[in-house]
Each structure stands twice: as structure tokens, then as C-alpha cells.
Amino acid sequence: MFEKLRQHLFQRDLQKRLQTHRSKRSSMPLERARYVGILFNGTNLDERKPVLAFAKRLKKEGKRVKLLAFMDNKADNSNFPFNNFNRKDINWYYIPKSEDVRNFMEEPFDILINLELNPSPWMDYIPALSKARFRVGTADAAPEACDLMLDMSKGKGIEEFIRQTERYLEKMQTRQNEIPIS
Image (cartoon, rainbow, N blue to C red):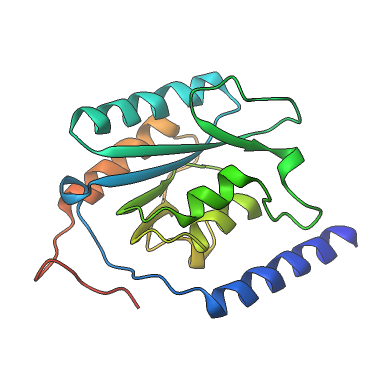
């Protein structure tokens, strides 16, 4: 019963904010992106390593990269080299309330990549209200959180999701520099 109430309050808050949220959306190939945001679950070291390697590779290509990780704990995670939030930073109805999250949502990313393989309300909330021009996530994410949704087979890991994301973003074509997304 409480879970349904929490989900209802979450959806109501998200829909209310989406009504007034305005952001210029347009598709963009990865090669043209200058500023990339990466949202991921940083709890597990084995899943964190490929994400950090991907970010490093993008930086070597001359892109600005900003990371935001969800850490599934209530501990002090300030010693990590990337911005993060945890369960302490999520209110009762799943809305993230940290300064790092607010700042990340305000960034004008060319592309925001949500590398969370197991969707959760707070990990959909951030890209849904982000000022990013183009948002990528899994097919399990909320539709309002992504412009491009990739269907990952069960059992495939984060490394495969990163490969698929790069592959599709590299093949993306745009006419006259921009195609607005409605």
C-alpha cells in the first residue's frame, strides 16, 4: 500500500515538473558532442570500472565529461573522484534532493547517457528533468527520461551497454545539423 502511494506521489511530482520544464532537445552523434554527462550506479566496483574507462576515453577524444553516480548506501561517499548521491539524498517518494543532483540536471550536456541497467525512479527523474539536448538510456527506463532507448538482453553487462551506446550514437545521422525531437 505504501509503495503504491510513494510511486503515485513520485509520478505526480514528475508530471507536474515536466509540464513547466523546457529544454531544447535534438539528436546528436557522439563525434559532434562536446559535453557529455554520464549517470551510473557506482555501488559495485566491477560496474564502476568500465564506466570510468569510458569517461576517460571520451576525455581523450577532447570531450568534457561530467559523472554522477548513485551509491546504494547511506555512508559518506565524499572520497570518490566523481559526484555522487545515495539513499540519504532521496526523499520518501523517490525524488533525489542533493546539490550534486540539482547541478547535474542543470548542465547543458550535448548528450546525457544513463548507464543504469536496473531502472529506478530516481535514476529516471534526473534525465527526465535534465537540460541535456539528447538523452540515452535502456528500454526499461521511463519514456520521458530518454530520447534514445536501447534494448539490452538480460545478462548483458555494463560493458556491452556502453558498446551499444557508442555504436548507435556513432551511426546517428543529422540533417542540417539538428533534428528537433518532439
